[in-house]
Length: 226
Image (cartoon, rainbow, N blue to C red; front, side, top):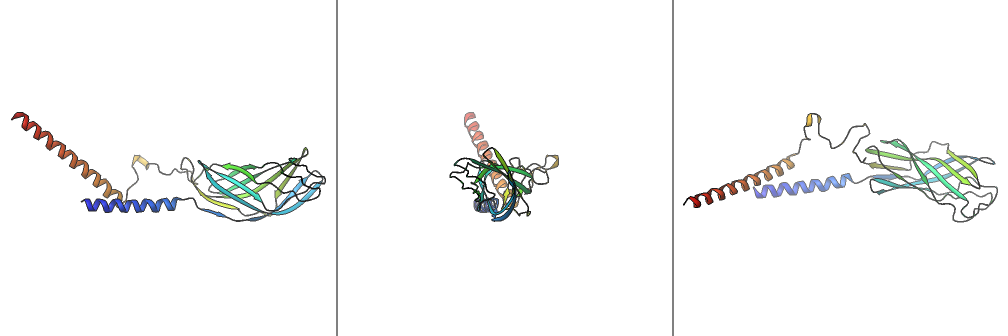
């Protein structure tokens, strides 16, 4: 019986280890060219920049970082250090929907006139509302500088720069159902043979302890009468 229980426990541990590996968040990232059409105070401009989005687990959510590999738009006058403040939205797809706002620090160095504006890394936090594979795609970029606002909109329907397998805090799936809950009527999920073996082994141990305790009680009672 001991050997069988030991084998069952070892098997369960192996399965648990496999489950942990399978449950590890899967990620897929691509650098995607985004064709931005910008509305500026001095007219329309366009620029293509490769966009990279990374997601790092942070508590119950993910810290997103959006990186622009090339500059976008330009200014007819020099933008002094700290004169420009960028922000953007990242569009969600797949299992989740909506947008995530990201923003970055102002320009660390002056931007010469009529040169592409280098956007600092933009960061924000995404908290999953649904469980499943979620995609992250570059959305509208906003540049505020010298009291003006420039809005740059992707025009080439770019694909996702990042895909993540996420789990919502409440375990909700994309179809609105809940994971890990008891089945209808209060019936708990069925267990596999390994779980049954462990459960039976535990039950057997409990019965054995109960039987031993009963024998000791009867023995003491017999001695007391004697």
